Length: 249
Image (cartoon, rainbow, N blue to C red; front, side):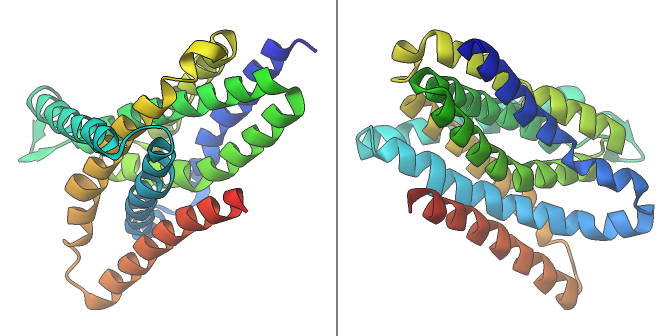
């Protein structure tokens, strides 16, 4: 089979990971609402841990420390500006509250960048060999499942319906296909650009976790539920760190 076809199939399979949240369609609304905060907490931890242990760590292997943190700050500031824009243009008032919180759009934007990078990595891997590409794809899918579940929870929490969250999450995930095709066709050129993109995406993820998700966890007044959310926040951090450890060993 043509190697480019392998890339397209692999990235499409990775795209369907976005539907991991479909289980919630059969869960009672009250129960789903109770676990939403857990998903938000897990996603906050996973985003922070992924940014530091995966994206920034990978960048530091190829770029000077000052450059990495400069690109990270650019990503952080740009996401701040984007959120300001979304507040101004996407906040439709209804009873004094936004129908869809801007963090929902930020998650989609940030996830789109992240998935594009994943696609580039898959495409470059298949340019090395098909077996190496398949292994890389499996590793990325394993990394995506918990993150996409957390992102789905954040989208619903931010005001999306469950069906809309699934569809938009899937569309965001499809940037992986674009990245995969470009990564394969221009592997020798794009490969050198990935270290510059990674810290930019890391800055965006750090902003989302620190500015939008973690403050939501502080709104829980009950100690028991607050400790539960904090536990899943730590689980998100540990899970991404564990993946980093397993992949390197």
